[in-house]
Length: 142
Image (cartoon, rainbow, N blue to C red; front, side, top):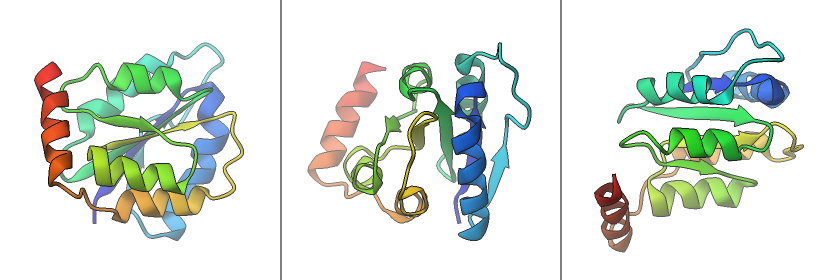
């Protein structure tokens, strides 16, 4: 079972804590890389911590206010395909079509289907086929 490396800045802390409880409930292993937040912390620092840990045997979960900053920062790292998702369908498609390895959430959104988002991201496989060609073109951009 793939492990999640998780981090948030101060604006994402509430959603992150909810996600951690749900990961525990789903029996999905995780490690919180931002156990303490301050009002002056910076999301790129947490994106960096998570991207260093993510590998073929693990996923990342990042949360900041909009989710956009974490997405931009994480996607600067070679081999990372961070996807900002708003619902379970996005989570599933991020895995199926983009082979995304980091799930990004907004700390300012009230996710009614957060459990399904986490579960779908964790259990959905990459479809390969024509999607492999596209992911390889993304890799070429690195």
